[in-house]
Image (tube, helix red, strand yellow):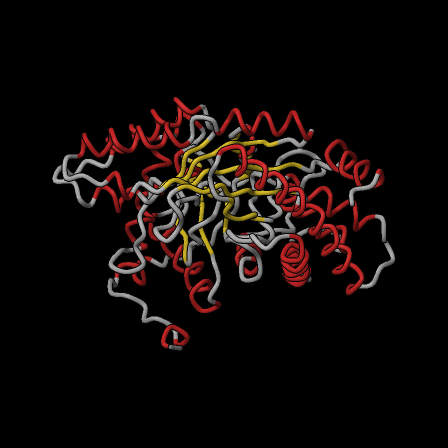
Length: 415
Protein backbone atom coordinates (compact mmCIF):
# COMPACT_ATOMS: atom_id res chain seq x y z
CA UNK A 1 0.00 0.00 0.00
CA UNK A 2 1.37 3.43 -1.00
CA UNK A 3 1.31 6.00 1.78
CA UNK A 4 1.74 9.77 1.83
CA UNK A 5 5.37 9.49 2.96
CA UNK A 6 6.26 7.31 -0.04
CA UNK A 7 4.64 9.78 -2.44
CA UNK A 8 6.40 12.78 -0.92
CA UNK A 9 9.73 10.94 -0.88
CA UNK A 10 9.43 10.14 -4.58
CA UNK A 11 8.55 13.75 -5.39
CA UNK A 12 11.62 14.91 -3.47
CA UNK A 13 13.84 12.42 -5.30
CA UNK A 14 12.60 13.72 -8.65
CA UNK A 15 12.78 17.42 -7.80
CA UNK A 16 15.92 17.61 -5.69
CA UNK A 17 17.99 14.50 -6.39
CA UNK A 18 17.84 14.10 -10.21
CA UNK A 19 15.82 10.87 -10.14
CA UNK A 20 14.50 9.97 -13.58
CA UNK A 21 13.77 7.19 -16.02
CA UNK A 22 16.72 7.50 -18.37
CA UNK A 23 15.01 5.64 -21.20
CA UNK A 24 12.18 3.49 -22.36
CA UNK A 25 13.59 1.47 -25.24
CA UNK A 26 11.49 -0.56 -27.63
CA UNK A 27 13.36 -3.60 -28.92
CA UNK A 28 12.21 -4.71 -32.36
CA UNK A 29 13.23 -7.90 -34.18
CA UNK A 30 14.03 -7.40 -37.86
CA UNK A 31 14.56 -11.08 -38.65
CA UNK A 32 11.34 -11.19 -40.67
CA UNK A 33 12.63 -8.27 -42.76
CA UNK A 34 15.43 -10.33 -44.31
CA UNK A 35 15.42 -10.22 -48.12
CA UNK A 36 18.04 -10.85 -50.79
CA UNK A 37 17.04 -7.54 -52.38
CA UNK A 38 18.55 -4.83 -50.19
CA UNK A 39 16.03 -2.18 -51.20
CA UNK A 40 13.11 -4.45 -50.32
CA UNK A 41 14.80 -5.34 -47.01
CA UNK A 42 15.28 -1.65 -46.16
CA UNK A 43 11.63 -0.96 -46.98
CA UNK A 44 10.55 -3.80 -44.69
CA UNK A 45 12.82 -2.48 -41.92
CA UNK A 46 11.35 1.01 -42.19
CA UNK A 47 7.78 -0.25 -42.28
CA UNK A 48 8.18 -2.57 -39.28
CA UNK A 49 9.90 0.00 -37.07
CA UNK A 50 7.40 2.76 -37.86
CA UNK A 51 4.50 0.36 -37.32
CA UNK A 52 5.68 -1.02 -33.97
CA UNK A 53 7.05 2.24 -32.53
CA UNK A 54 4.57 4.76 -33.88
CA UNK A 55 3.13 5.44 -30.41
CA UNK A 56 6.33 5.04 -28.37
CA UNK A 57 7.11 8.73 -27.87
CA UNK A 58 3.47 9.64 -27.26
CA UNK A 59 3.16 6.86 -24.68
CA UNK A 60 6.29 7.99 -22.85
CA UNK A 61 5.02 11.56 -22.72
CA UNK A 62 1.64 10.39 -21.44
CA UNK A 63 3.28 8.40 -18.62
CA UNK A 64 5.42 11.43 -17.72
CA UNK A 65 2.32 13.60 -17.47
CA UNK A 66 0.20 11.05 -15.62
CA UNK A 67 2.76 10.05 -12.99
CA UNK A 68 5.05 13.09 -12.91
CA UNK A 69 8.09 10.92 -13.63
CA UNK A 70 10.66 12.37 -16.06
CA UNK A 71 11.47 10.02 -18.95
CA UNK A 72 14.55 11.56 -20.54
CA UNK A 73 14.78 9.51 -23.73
CA UNK A 74 12.55 7.33 -25.89
CA UNK A 75 14.68 4.92 -27.91
CA UNK A 76 14.54 1.96 -30.28
CA UNK A 77 16.91 -0.98 -30.55
CA UNK A 78 16.86 -3.46 -33.43
CA UNK A 79 18.40 -6.75 -34.50
CA UNK A 80 22.09 -6.24 -35.40
CA UNK A 81 22.02 -5.00 -38.97
CA UNK A 82 24.94 -7.22 -39.96
CA UNK A 83 22.60 -10.19 -39.58
CA UNK A 84 19.94 -8.64 -41.83
CA UNK A 85 22.37 -7.40 -44.48
CA UNK A 86 24.18 -10.74 -44.71
CA UNK A 87 21.34 -12.12 -46.85
CA UNK A 88 21.44 -9.26 -49.34
CA UNK A 89 23.20 -9.76 -52.66
CA UNK A 90 24.17 -6.08 -52.72
CA UNK A 91 26.64 -5.41 -49.91
CA UNK A 92 25.87 -1.81 -49.03
CA UNK A 93 24.92 -1.59 -45.34
CA UNK A 94 24.80 2.21 -45.52
CA UNK A 95 21.34 1.78 -47.09
CA UNK A 96 20.23 0.18 -43.83
CA UNK A 97 21.70 3.08 -41.87
CA UNK A 98 19.67 5.53 -43.93
CA UNK A 99 16.52 3.42 -43.45
CA UNK A 100 17.08 3.34 -39.68
CA UNK A 101 17.61 7.10 -39.56
CA UNK A 102 14.45 7.70 -41.58
CA UNK A 103 12.46 5.41 -39.27
CA UNK A 104 13.86 7.11 -36.17
CA UNK A 105 12.93 10.53 -37.56
CA UNK A 106 9.42 9.35 -38.39
CA UNK A 107 8.88 7.93 -34.89
CA UNK A 108 10.46 10.95 -33.22
CA UNK A 109 12.77 8.95 -30.94
CA UNK A 110 16.02 10.26 -29.49
CA UNK A 111 18.22 7.33 -30.51
CA UNK A 112 18.06 4.13 -32.50
CA UNK A 113 20.58 1.36 -31.80
CA UNK A 114 21.50 -1.82 -33.57
CA UNK A 115 23.57 -0.66 -36.52
CA UNK A 116 26.05 -3.21 -35.31
CA UNK A 117 27.51 -6.69 -35.69
CA UNK A 118 28.02 -9.72 -33.44
CA UNK A 119 31.59 -10.78 -34.12
CA UNK A 120 32.69 -13.00 -31.27
CA UNK A 121 35.20 -14.66 -33.60
CA UNK A 122 36.76 -13.87 -36.93
CA UNK A 123 37.16 -10.14 -36.30
CA UNK A 124 40.06 -7.97 -35.24
CA UNK A 125 40.58 -5.34 -32.57
CA UNK A 126 43.29 -4.02 -34.85
CA UNK A 127 40.60 -3.05 -37.35
CA UNK A 128 38.46 -1.35 -34.71
CA UNK A 129 41.35 0.84 -33.58
CA UNK A 130 41.66 2.17 -37.14
CA UNK A 131 37.90 2.66 -37.52
CA UNK A 132 37.62 4.64 -34.27
CA UNK A 133 40.51 6.89 -35.28
CA UNK A 134 39.03 7.43 -38.76
CA UNK A 135 35.60 8.18 -37.29
CA UNK A 136 37.13 10.91 -35.12
CA UNK A 137 39.00 12.38 -38.07
CA UNK A 138 35.88 12.48 -40.25
CA UNK A 139 33.92 14.33 -37.56
CA UNK A 140 36.74 16.58 -36.39
CA UNK A 141 34.67 19.64 -37.33
CA UNK A 142 31.89 18.48 -34.98
CA UNK A 143 33.77 17.83 -31.73
CA UNK A 144 34.90 14.41 -33.06
CA UNK A 145 31.40 13.12 -32.23
CA UNK A 146 31.65 10.00 -34.43
CA UNK A 147 33.33 7.67 -31.91
CA UNK A 148 30.87 8.80 -29.20
CA UNK A 149 28.28 6.76 -31.11
CA UNK A 150 30.49 3.70 -31.46
CA UNK A 151 31.23 1.20 -28.68
CA UNK A 152 33.13 -2.09 -28.75
CA UNK A 153 31.70 -4.67 -26.32
CA UNK A 154 32.91 -7.91 -24.80
CA UNK A 155 30.10 -10.18 -23.54
CA UNK A 156 27.45 -7.74 -24.71
CA UNK A 157 23.98 -8.25 -23.14
CA UNK A 158 21.18 -8.67 -25.68
CA UNK A 159 18.63 -6.59 -23.74
CA UNK A 160 20.62 -3.46 -22.95
CA UNK A 161 18.44 -0.32 -23.32
CA UNK A 162 21.38 2.10 -23.08
CA UNK A 163 23.20 3.64 -26.05
CA UNK A 164 25.53 3.22 -27.76
CA UNK A 165 25.52 -0.51 -26.99
CA UNK A 166 21.81 -1.21 -27.39
CA UNK A 167 20.70 -3.90 -29.81
CA UNK A 168 17.83 -6.39 -29.91
CA UNK A 169 19.25 -9.87 -29.41
CA UNK A 170 18.24 -12.74 -31.67
CA UNK A 171 16.78 -14.60 -28.70
CA UNK A 172 14.53 -11.71 -27.70
CA UNK A 173 10.77 -11.50 -28.46
CA UNK A 174 9.50 -9.91 -31.68
CA UNK A 175 8.86 -6.65 -29.85
CA UNK A 176 9.52 -5.74 -26.23
CA UNK A 177 9.77 -2.73 -23.89
CA UNK A 178 12.94 -2.32 -21.80
CA UNK A 179 13.45 0.43 -19.22
CA UNK A 180 16.68 2.04 -18.06
CA UNK A 181 16.53 3.84 -14.73
CA UNK A 182 18.96 6.28 -13.19
CA UNK A 183 19.52 7.69 -9.76
CA UNK A 184 23.09 8.53 -8.69
CA UNK A 185 21.84 11.69 -7.01
CA UNK A 186 19.33 9.73 -4.94
CA UNK A 187 21.98 7.25 -3.76
CA UNK A 188 24.42 10.04 -2.93
CA UNK A 189 21.80 11.92 -0.91
CA UNK A 190 20.88 8.77 1.03
CA UNK A 191 24.52 8.12 1.95
CA UNK A 192 25.15 11.71 3.01
CA UNK A 193 22.34 11.43 5.59
CA UNK A 194 24.45 8.83 7.43
CA UNK A 195 27.96 10.30 7.71
CA UNK A 196 29.00 7.95 10.52
CA UNK A 197 27.59 4.70 9.11
CA UNK A 198 29.82 1.64 8.84
CA UNK A 199 30.63 0.02 5.50
CA UNK A 200 28.00 -2.71 5.86
CA UNK A 201 25.44 -0.09 6.88
CA UNK A 202 26.35 1.94 3.79
CA UNK A 203 25.79 -1.16 1.64
CA UNK A 204 22.37 -1.63 3.21
CA UNK A 205 21.45 2.02 2.59
CA UNK A 206 22.40 1.66 -1.09
CA UNK A 207 20.37 -1.56 -1.41
CA UNK A 208 17.27 0.07 0.03
CA UNK A 209 17.67 3.09 -2.23
CA UNK A 210 18.21 0.93 -5.32
CA UNK A 211 15.02 -0.92 -4.40
CA UNK A 212 13.02 2.32 -4.48
CA UNK A 213 14.55 3.46 -7.77
CA UNK A 214 13.91 0.10 -9.41
CA UNK A 215 10.28 0.04 -8.27
CA UNK A 216 9.74 3.24 -10.23
CA UNK A 217 11.29 1.63 -13.30
CA UNK A 218 9.06 -1.42 -12.82
CA UNK A 219 6.00 0.85 -12.71
CA UNK A 220 6.93 2.72 -15.90
CA UNK A 221 7.86 -0.47 -17.77
CA UNK A 222 4.62 -2.20 -16.82
CA UNK A 223 2.53 0.82 -17.76
CA UNK A 224 4.31 1.32 -21.11
CA UNK A 225 3.91 -2.39 -21.88
CA UNK A 226 0.19 -2.23 -21.18
CA UNK A 227 -0.38 0.94 -23.19
CA UNK A 228 1.65 -0.20 -26.21
CA UNK A 229 0.40 -3.78 -26.16
CA UNK A 230 3.88 -5.33 -26.21
CA UNK A 231 5.62 -7.52 -23.60
CA UNK A 232 7.59 -5.92 -20.75
CA UNK A 233 11.19 -7.00 -21.05
CA UNK A 234 13.59 -5.81 -18.36
CA UNK A 235 14.49 -2.99 -16.01
CA UNK A 236 18.15 -2.06 -16.31
CA UNK A 237 18.85 -0.48 -12.92
CA UNK A 238 22.23 0.97 -13.84
CA UNK A 239 23.24 4.17 -12.09
CA UNK A 240 23.71 6.25 -15.24
CA UNK A 241 25.09 9.71 -14.44
CA UNK A 242 24.53 12.99 -16.24
CA UNK A 243 26.57 16.21 -16.40
CA UNK A 244 24.03 17.78 -14.01
CA UNK A 245 25.37 18.82 -10.62
CA UNK A 246 24.58 16.16 -8.02
CA UNK A 247 23.92 13.37 -10.53
CA UNK A 248 27.34 11.72 -10.39
CA UNK A 249 28.61 8.22 -9.62
CA UNK A 250 31.95 9.76 -8.63
CA UNK A 251 30.16 11.82 -5.99
CA UNK A 252 28.63 8.63 -4.55
CA UNK A 253 32.12 7.18 -4.13
CA UNK A 254 33.27 10.38 -2.49
CA UNK A 255 30.20 10.27 -0.24
CA UNK A 256 31.30 6.82 0.89
CA UNK A 257 34.51 8.38 2.16
CA UNK A 258 37.02 9.07 -0.63
CA UNK A 259 38.55 12.53 -0.85
CA UNK A 260 38.35 12.22 -4.62
CA UNK A 261 37.28 9.54 -7.05
CA UNK A 262 40.43 7.89 -8.36
CA UNK A 263 42.35 7.75 -5.12
CA UNK A 264 43.29 4.44 -3.50
CA UNK A 265 40.15 2.64 -2.37
CA UNK A 266 38.10 3.74 -5.39
CA UNK A 267 37.88 0.25 -6.89
CA UNK A 268 36.75 -1.23 -3.56
CA UNK A 269 34.12 1.49 -3.06
CA UNK A 270 32.84 0.98 -6.61
CA UNK A 271 32.63 -2.78 -6.08
CA UNK A 272 30.56 -2.19 -2.94
CA UNK A 273 28.28 0.21 -4.81
CA UNK A 274 27.79 -2.05 -7.81
CA UNK A 275 27.01 -5.11 -5.70
CA UNK A 276 24.57 -3.26 -3.45
CA UNK A 277 22.72 -1.77 -6.43
CA UNK A 278 22.24 -5.22 -7.95
CA UNK A 279 21.07 -6.74 -4.65
CA UNK A 280 18.57 -3.96 -4.05
CA UNK A 281 17.29 -4.07 -7.61
CA UNK A 282 16.62 -7.79 -7.83
CA UNK A 283 14.42 -7.53 -4.74
CA UNK A 284 12.34 -4.82 -6.43
CA UNK A 285 11.72 -6.47 -9.79
CA UNK A 286 11.71 -9.94 -11.28
CA UNK A 287 12.57 -8.35 -14.62
CA UNK A 288 16.07 -7.03 -13.88
CA UNK A 289 18.42 -7.35 -16.84
CA UNK A 290 20.62 -5.43 -19.22
CA UNK A 291 23.77 -4.19 -17.49
CA UNK A 292 22.42 -3.16 -14.05
CA UNK A 293 25.10 -1.62 -11.87
CA UNK A 294 27.11 1.59 -12.04
CA UNK A 295 28.30 3.41 -15.16
CA UNK A 296 31.56 5.35 -15.02
CA UNK A 297 31.63 7.48 -18.19
CA UNK A 298 33.94 10.44 -17.83
CA UNK A 299 32.30 13.06 -20.05
CA UNK A 300 28.78 12.33 -18.71
CA UNK A 301 29.73 12.57 -15.02
CA UNK A 302 30.58 15.94 -13.45
CA UNK A 303 32.42 14.26 -10.56
CA UNK A 304 34.55 12.14 -12.90
CA UNK A 305 35.49 15.25 -14.88
CA UNK A 306 36.56 17.01 -11.66
CA UNK A 307 38.62 13.97 -10.62
CA UNK A 308 40.43 13.96 -13.96
CA UNK A 309 41.09 17.70 -13.81
CA UNK A 310 42.48 17.55 -10.26
CA UNK A 311 44.83 14.70 -11.20
CA UNK A 312 43.23 12.03 -9.00
CA UNK A 313 41.78 9.92 -11.84
CA UNK A 314 43.81 8.48 -14.70
CA UNK A 315 43.12 6.04 -17.52
CA UNK A 316 44.87 3.19 -15.74
CA UNK A 317 42.73 3.65 -12.61
CA UNK A 318 39.59 3.72 -14.74
CA UNK A 319 40.66 0.43 -16.30
CA UNK A 320 41.02 -1.11 -12.84
CA UNK A 321 37.55 0.16 -11.93
CA UNK A 322 36.04 -1.54 -14.98
CA UNK A 323 36.84 -4.93 -13.43
CA UNK A 324 34.06 -4.38 -10.87
CA UNK A 325 31.50 -2.09 -12.53
CA UNK A 326 28.85 -2.51 -15.20
CA UNK A 327 30.62 -1.58 -18.40
CA UNK A 328 34.09 -0.33 -19.18
CA UNK A 329 36.08 2.64 -20.44
CA UNK A 330 33.18 4.83 -21.49
CA UNK A 331 33.13 8.29 -23.07
CA UNK A 332 36.82 8.92 -22.51
CA UNK A 333 38.51 11.62 -24.57
CA UNK A 334 42.12 10.93 -25.55
CA UNK A 335 44.72 13.02 -27.42
CA UNK A 336 44.11 13.36 -31.14
CA UNK A 337 47.51 11.97 -32.03
CA UNK A 338 46.81 8.61 -30.34
CA UNK A 339 47.74 5.78 -32.69
CA UNK A 340 45.23 3.26 -33.99
CA UNK A 341 47.40 0.54 -32.43
CA UNK A 342 47.11 2.12 -28.98
CA UNK A 343 43.32 2.29 -29.32
CA UNK A 344 43.31 -1.38 -30.33
CA UNK A 345 45.49 -2.29 -27.36
CA UNK A 346 43.11 -0.49 -24.97
CA UNK A 347 40.22 -2.48 -26.49
CA UNK A 348 42.24 -5.68 -26.08
CA UNK A 349 42.90 -4.90 -22.40
CA UNK A 350 39.20 -4.36 -21.71
CA UNK A 351 38.21 -7.49 -23.62
CA UNK A 352 40.71 -9.45 -21.55
CA UNK A 353 39.14 -8.16 -18.33
CA UNK A 354 35.71 -9.13 -19.64
CA UNK A 355 36.69 -12.59 -20.85
CA UNK A 356 38.73 -13.63 -17.82
CA UNK A 357 36.13 -12.33 -15.35
CA UNK A 358 33.14 -13.49 -17.41
CA UNK A 359 31.57 -10.02 -17.31
CA UNK A 360 30.57 -7.27 -19.70
CA UNK A 361 33.22 -4.72 -20.60
CA UNK A 362 33.32 -2.12 -23.34
CA UNK A 363 35.37 0.70 -24.83
CA UNK A 364 34.11 4.04 -26.12
CA UNK A 365 37.09 6.30 -26.75
CA UNK A 366 36.99 9.65 -28.53
CA UNK A 367 40.29 10.77 -30.09
CA UNK A 368 40.23 14.57 -29.94
CA UNK A 369 41.75 15.48 -33.29
CA UNK A 370 43.98 18.53 -32.99
CA UNK A 371 43.73 18.61 -29.20
CA UNK A 372 46.09 17.65 -26.39
CA UNK A 373 45.93 16.76 -22.69
CA UNK A 374 44.16 19.53 -20.81
CA UNK A 375 41.91 20.54 -23.72
CA UNK A 376 38.18 19.74 -23.76
CA UNK A 377 35.59 18.45 -26.21
CA UNK A 378 32.05 19.82 -25.76
CA UNK A 379 29.37 17.32 -26.86
CA UNK A 380 26.31 18.82 -25.22
CA UNK A 381 23.22 17.10 -23.85
CA UNK A 382 23.65 13.85 -21.91
CA UNK A 383 27.07 13.32 -23.49
CA UNK A 384 28.39 16.38 -21.65
CA UNK A 385 31.98 17.47 -22.13
CA UNK A 386 35.20 15.54 -21.84
CA UNK A 387 38.71 16.59 -20.77
CA UNK A 388 41.47 15.07 -22.88
CA UNK A 389 43.15 12.41 -20.73
CA UNK A 390 46.78 11.38 -20.78
CA UNK A 391 47.74 8.03 -22.33
CA UNK A 392 50.77 5.77 -22.07
CA UNK A 393 53.03 6.69 -24.98
CA UNK A 394 54.93 3.41 -25.18
CA UNK A 395 53.92 1.57 -28.35
CA UNK A 396 51.95 -1.72 -28.44
CA UNK A 397 52.16 -1.78 -32.26
CA UNK A 398 54.16 -5.02 -32.57
CA UNK A 399 51.76 -6.88 -30.27
CA UNK A 400 48.71 -5.65 -32.20
CA UNK A 401 50.25 -6.36 -35.61
CA UNK A 402 51.12 -10.01 -34.85
CA UNK A 403 47.71 -11.23 -36.00
CA UNK A 404 46.14 -14.45 -34.77
CA UNK A 405 43.79 -14.80 -31.83
CA UNK A 406 44.23 -14.87 -28.06
CA UNK A 407 43.08 -18.35 -26.96
CA UNK A 408 39.84 -18.54 -25.00
CA UNK A 409 40.24 -18.69 -21.20
CA UNK A 410 39.79 -21.97 -19.34
CA UNK A 411 36.29 -21.18 -18.08
CA UNK A 412 35.09 -21.25 -21.72
CA UNK A 413 35.26 -25.08 -21.58
CA UNK A 414 33.34 -25.40 -18.31
CA UNK A 415 30.61 -27.43 -20.04
